[in-house]
Length: 218
Image 1 (cartoon, rainbow, N blue to C red):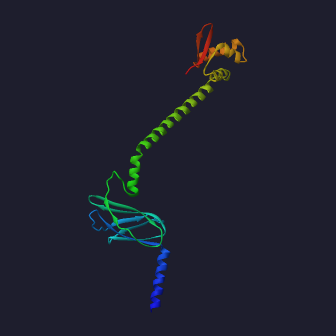
Image 2: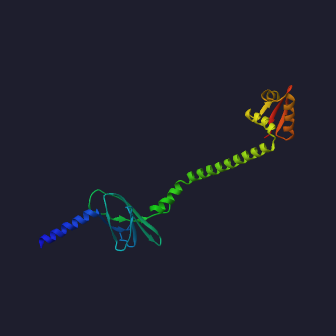
């Protein structure tokens, strides 16, 4: 008989070892009164969550470090407790938790932690939002300007576009003499083309000394 009892006891020890450590605890409020209907959660894999009905909770956990939280809702607010437990070996662990009121300013658990994170990073989010809007506006006007330029280029005869491209290569402004030098066309032809561009309101002519400055119209 004694051998059977010892054998059974040995088997129970093996089962407990296979499961890992046993975590047991009681739940109290700030005045040390026991609490029922408390949601207790441990971030194991998978997450374990229980609603404690009889003041105490029980978990089986393998070796590792865990965060255990307890949440209790009342008509006047929320009570909360959080403990980090390091399970270093197998066996039994006692962990009593004392729940205290939690204000909205401090946050609690995942939900409250997210609210607190948002509050702390509202300035960062605002800056990112402004940058995204500014980038969107910049891209919009850049594409609009590019589209406008392409449309204007299509409306200008190809031979006149050669002078416009030449002006763009030189920051939008050149003397009429320099344009003649860089163009393979005759002086009379260049002068006529510039007159056509002035009529099309693509360029303007500015008198400077004995020469003329030709610049693109903005």
